[in-house]
Length: 158
Image (cartoon, rainbow, N blue to C red; front, side, top):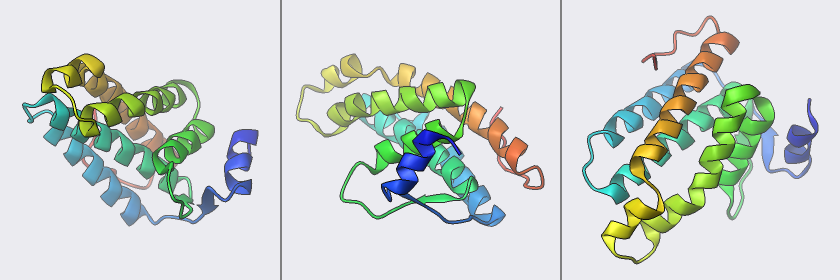
């Protein structure tokens, strides 16, 4: 276990809690569905919200697949989820989880702050977010089929 993961456990930000294959597969289906929905939306604010949610659902699936869950907290659960996956994974998946975490503040401003609707796209380009989420989901899918070879994770994310 690496130091970053140990810190998350020691701080009680996450707890060990094994997940069944059924839970992992169900969480994955929801993430893929959210990502597909994000590509059907016209407004920048909604595209950002739904695409980001798909990425968060994908990293939550990875965290649960690895046998961890978030500990109840007053805030920062998105940050903790991304930090857990970054601690668990290596290479592109770690980089993408960190990138999505960095995008989360801009996503928050685009979705929740009162502003001119045209500024949402300038603050966080929905297409850029979708590219990061698509890359993350592709890497997450590869990780899931590698770590749970007996699990038919459907739908696939090519």
